[in-house]
Image: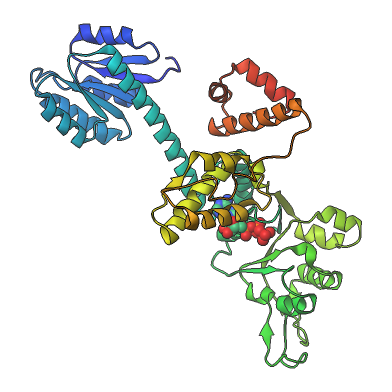
Amino acid sequence: MTDKPVLLIVEDDLALQRQLRWAYEGYEIVGAATRAEAIEALRSREPAVVTLDLGLPPDPDGTSEGFATLAEMLALKPATKIIVASGHGARDSALRAIALGAWDFYAKPIDIDALGLIVARAFHVHALEAENRRLAARETAAAGFGGLIYASDEMAKVVRTIERVAPADVSVMLLGASGTGKELLARGIHDHSPRRRGEFVAINCAAIPETLLESELFGHEKGAFTGAVKTTPGKIEQAAGGTLFLDEIGDVPLPLQVKLLRFLQERVIERIGGRKPIPVDTRIVCATHQDLGTMVADGRFRDDLYYRLAEIVVRIPGLAERPGDASLLARAFVRRHAAAMNPAVTGLAPDALAAIDAWGWPGNVRELENRIKRAVIMADGKSVTAADLDLDATAADALPLNLRSARETADRKAIRQALAQADGNISGASRLLGVSRPTLYDLLKSYDLHG
Ligand SMILES: Nc1ncnc2c1ncn2[C@@H]1O[C@H](COP(=O)(O)OP(=O)(O)OP(=O)(O)O)[C@@H](O)[C@H]1O
């Protein structure tokens, strides 16, 4: 066995089969002369592409056995690209073969070069479709994770960690820049934990004025302060039996940090103006874009609270550090927003994809989604362009330090993308990059990248 792509040739004329074997060098050729042999080869070798002669025994002058083989193969492995050949009543057979799901048809006698082109194209399309299926599978697998979409190994690693910690009742701290998907991941933790039937309650500690934050979190009794007209439970109580997501935890003022710490130690709260402690069983997931380590060192964040909250710390990389994610997310957002706002739009133009890859995404996924939403509304034609995204002029980067550093940046980016596309496979990535494996190894070493 070689690692060349497998081409199955179903042909009862053994001389012709031999001739084809010699003609196509780039593939590993497997021959079959009957339906039974063809099915056996399909099962054992799973060829991506098959050429099928319709005139097979016991009906070598007709097409019945050929069509039966076609139908059986497609039923077994629908993604197989089957190219049908026949000399009899070519037009009718062609129509019938295509209707049954054949990839293409050619009329005998065989022209080796013409058939070679059809075969090569079939392999190419098969590979593209396989890649699409792989990405779609990742999308669906991740859909359980609050609809999280990703292709990069960086994000796959984050998801693996989250999947592992979700069922354990530990507090999780998510660190990442704004718009990287922290809330989505927090929701994912909740949905994959035994508390999923309870509520997921999110509170953005930065968005609520200091004076109100305590009451929001802990609730208040009627009459506790002016305007407290009725007793109101806080977010912590609301999250009993579920998960409390404290976003921007770094913005909680010090006095409230003390109260939060007491809750985490004793698992009881007291509403403002209340006298009796109320036990609350909730899991805390928190997030911040701030450097809590420095805040602890500066005395702006209590270290005892930090350690209570950060039993597990998960770092979420920025969108620009996740090769392949931006374009995958962009496609998904185009689908989502086009359906709602401009159904004529079906995709992204090549210049838009290039601009998306080149952009630094300071606002991460949120920025990407907003740009796509606006572009879908603005788009005139079927495709969103770089101009619709407002990325054409702005995508021009500042001048790099020197040519060497510009080359290194470009190299690093291309290597990471190729590795992402090849699923981390060095041979695959080196083929995509057009360099030898040893060259790629050297580059990985010199740039301190990991394959
Ligand atoms: N991997 C992803 N797949 C699909 N959608 C995503 C992904 N990451 C983020 N989003 C979407 O992007 C938006 C921003 O994500 P989210 O609110 O989770 O970010 P955040 O890190 O919590 O941001 P902030 O810190 O500003 O609150 C949301 O609409 C979210 O649904």
